[in-house]
Image (cartoon, rainbow, N blue to C red):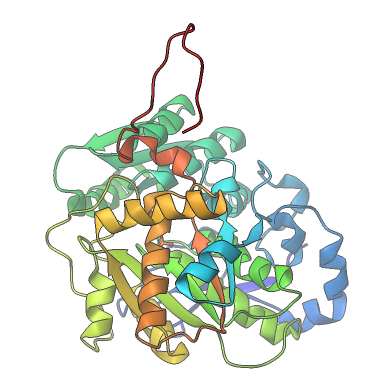
Length: 405
Ligand SMILES: Cc1ncc(COP(=O)(O)O)c(C=O)c1O
């Protein structure tokens, strides 16, 4: 049984029934959100029962939009470690720093949270083919979960897609199509195709359930801190879905009384300098982002030139006193190296942009050194090994004794 009651647009307030597939059609940039009977959950589900649940995002089953949890499509996603990062903290001048290591998810990125919950819900609702344009990580993830669920999946990917994501998508049997044109045309191509072929569009914020999977990052952050909010969350932002979802998670826990009422953590957003529509809009004091014209980013995620979640992310930034920063491609690679050297966590370069942003937020006073800060490492560096410079290594033959460096 599910506590899901209906779907509701955050801007125009339109309510839609949740017992059939629904697509967001708000003209004002609103988000079609899943709403629950939180009062009933508060009465039925003690917080302590969560702690004895599965070591995956399904521990929050009561807060997910699934009619029958035994039908879940799972590869054991979520409940990723939140690792204290004391060496990095000392270097940047921050007393309490954690890395939420989403690279531990089955396909190597946080995208698995959205795919697991949305694929499960879509199968319950009778959807048979899902389709989207994805810079690659979501394509990989949806390919794998659709394979497990027995759904058909269509992935439109850019021509610089990471080889890891391409392999995952193709090997999983997803219909995988590479766009040889500019990436910004992908959304319209998929929009036409879903109309023509009756596919279901699972693009960022087109439907409500990917968000429901990703909000569990917010639940986990609080639970792993002993049911407390951190002071700040640093998130590498593309379309905006992950950041929006984390804050939905925080708000729901507060509404349930599972964490104390209080101000939400500051949101710090990081984007590549070569695709920074949200940073630009934030700096210009705008409430929506203009399309970013010339994409110059490393292969991988953070390629959203027209982020669908722009308004909601900008609102969270302003309401929480947060800020938004860019990282160059080189800064991202350097920061990823610093992550691995100092903490032993190998992040993808997209994730390492958070470290660049953290340093800038500490330097300009947006964050105090005594804040408890969470860096979201949204993907594993193993997905991006081709993006890092080829390492120079010493070589030897079998007759030469090895010497210390
Ligand atoms: C590794 C990684 N991190 C972060 C993001 C940002 O996604 P979103 O802002 O939609 O949560 C993406 C997708 O572009 C990604 O692939």
